Length: 297
Image 1: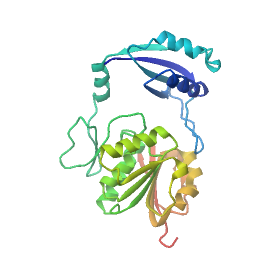
Image 2 (image 1 turned 90 degrees about the vertical axis):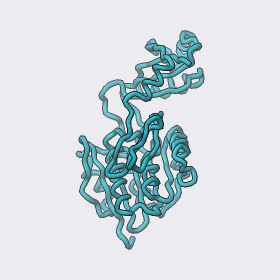
Image 3 (image 1 turned 60 degrees about the vertical axis):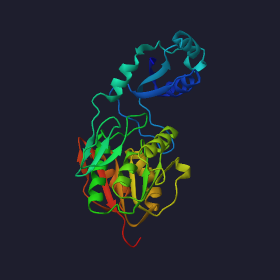
Image 4 (image 1 turned 180 degrees about the vertical axis):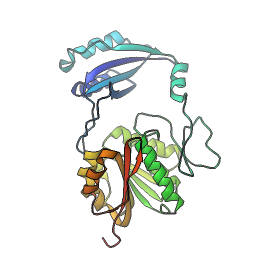
């Protein structure tokens, strides 16, 4: 089977309107990414992040009349001035090669590996199975890499054995799945994006962890006490969420916070000053801040 792509250069406001319109017109998948090197705005909890300049790409079946799709889009009052889309034909073999090319198992610490399903995992690894998808988090970004390496170290020292874990801002669910693979008993994953919740549920099934991992929107997030709270998001949401995350942490529990740059460590530390904070771990200008709650609080 072959596919067709329409790709639009739009601002953040237009992107949300355009996405809804494309879904209504039968798009099979829609992805949005930064069209340049603009920094990501940090939204408050409950809203979606957006770049200033966006490239929005929609995938359609080969037989779709793209001229009619674009005509229908421009009949939307909010999309009248929409610039013409770039078009691309994608053969089935090309699509499969794009998804699989260059993807290899990735190692973190001593034992942990994240492996796509078409590859053989390392023989000596504790493996999380994960294919690239629409939700953030395949293990390649420095913030995810920092979190996974830290989880491997916790697993090696036995700190995850039987743990109850909260993964806030779960994306693909990779952090929660890694915690389970390394000894945690249960994980509750939370994300503001319903697509991320669905992706996490699908990846839990892929790893045969449905009975241990649940995923939901923030409104359904359970109360504490969690042994470990993970949040790989952005600075401003992490600061705004500090009271809620700390309230869900049991006495003596641990926190791992990432999605921040090295320059933002001090600012984030002030929001989590109630914890005993460890020195930040760094990777390519990004940071992971970890801490432990007092045993008597």
